[in-house]
Image (cartoon, rainbow, N blue to C red; front, side, top):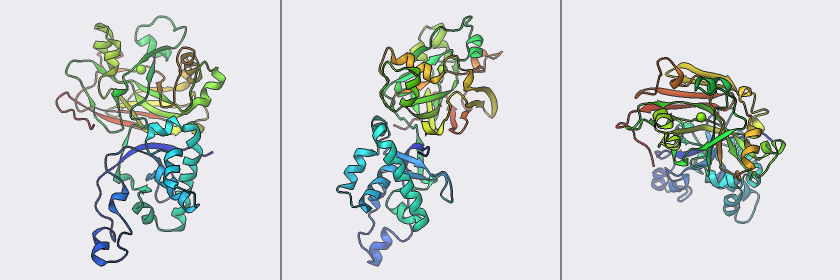
Amino acid sequence: MTALHLVCFERRPRPPLPGTGDHLERSGDQPGAFDAAEVGRPGAKRLGALVREGPRAGDVVDLNRALAAMLALEDVGAPEAEADSLVPADPLAFLRGFARGRGPAEEALAFVLDSLSRYDAPDLERAGILEERRRVRLCAPVPRPGKLLAVARNYAEHAAERGARERPVEPVLFVKASSSVIGPGEDVVLPAASEQVDYEGELAVVIGRPLREASEADALACVAGYTVANDVTARDFQHARGQHFLGKSCDTFCPLGPLLLTADGVSDPQDLELRTRLCGEVVQGARTKEMLFGVAEILAFASRLMTLEPGDVVLTGTPAGVGAAKDPPRYLRDGDVIEVEIDRIGCLRNPVVGPRAGRRDA
Ligand code: MG
């Protein structure tokens, strides 16, 4: 299998393509050959895959539509219903059926890449199968995880900078509200109630198969893929006020993205480099091998107590270098830009805005 770079995207409103729409109606050529509504409703979040090479690199394939078109050419009955069943347009529905849909998703992408070399790309665009990168807005690859778990103090140097004297004997898990998730480029909004909002760059694991009482050896087989997270935290709520959950769960406090790299694209999740930049300055840098508990250990441990389900997301902890540990502390401010980058997966970039300027798309 070839690794997929999966995204969740929204189409931006677009002007009619040359030679379509009004032009067709006016000219009387091929009336009805193209219905502008067919390119998709702006605002709906859909599953996509990035084209990685060639002149269309960076553009987005609508996997559900691509599969429907492929099945229609193969004379499969009810191709759209079959595509909806195998590769649903909704990213979370796709993850829930990941074991079934992973193969067809790859076939649909291959169909598009092959089509590009055989006939004009605009046909694919008119059918809503391929979108120019500038025509879409990327969202979090899992816009609303079923469960959003996170691990505390999972890098020794970070645990030390936060005052922990001893290594935890097992992964220390907590939850963030799933409603805190935002996508790449969206604003992290500083709540008026907090004066100590901090960043935490982290590797995020996306579950693709149910995981219950799994061994470490079996755990990684249940991973759909990996993405990048920022476990934004209001330190004053987390510590002084004893409101750990609230301090982790404010709206916009979990940027995720920009894409989900399927697990077959990551030969070893403990061999990735992670960097966090605040306004261009590197503030965190580590390799994931420095985790106290690796991904397999975290998942196996959690699965002894709770079922991890497809569409759940697990943040694996942050390395040293958070703002609270600096002297003086450096908390996030209106106008900051925070970036978390992980090898091969990508760079998650989010502006920071003050309470009043904050605006969040529904
Ligand atoms: Mg964290």
